[in-house]
Length: 349
Image (cartoon, rainbow, N blue to C red):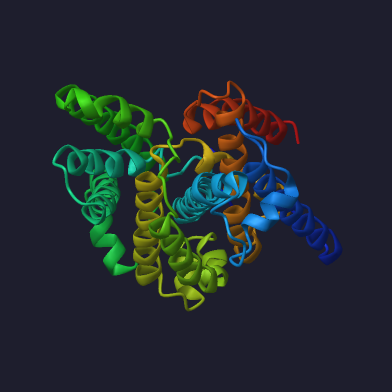
């Protein structure tokens, strides 16, 4: 299996990078405006921009009230969830130096969903649901790493080199299957009145009814915590031994990535349920465009993931309007052929 390495893709020129950034930002703006405009009740773009102005009185304007109360929170939830999932996937791919690593495949999302469902069944407050999801994601990471290799933690604390990527991925797939069984058990014993909502949430539900402050705060913390460490992540891609020889504190950096990836997955799962393929496909697409420089890839993955989930949510609530589809169904239907195309494209090069 090919590893993600700094020399996998050629470096691009500054004008090309600027053009790609502008195109990505423009696409994000267009998808954001479309998310606020389109739906069962179309809202003209002029009304959309009026709704975004805090001075505009929405009491007598139904269209503005729809944008502010329903579509704006949903668009922000989609953006934050997608950005968190893409960042988590990019970080885990750097950590394991493996292109198949992402929160869903490694069982991180399953652990977060399992713990969150337990809190939901128990009728806990929203902050306990968030805390439970974070605990489940972090427990899943520790479980995967602990089962993958008995000597992993000893080598990690010694700072010695290790190559556990294949075993980590296989163990993560097994742990993810186990979390899936736990989720099925929880759904079986859940109260009938809550079952439909829990099922829809698990397959991707962004209809939270309010501004997703938890996910937005987690996204801000994630970006501020990891983007400054991008140069160190570039060195880490060359291996632990090479990074340590170049002065990188490997153990604190790895633990930092573990914690941040756990936070990102937990916040995304708590806000929008288990939305798959975003953390796997988006970093690959960004890598094809920008190369593997983490200083460019991480912020671009966050922006690309946010735009992708916003677009998926727009399709989910408009394709059979007024009924809605789960967002996770749209991301899976789009993500599978895109990932297969990227695999074929990479092998043909």
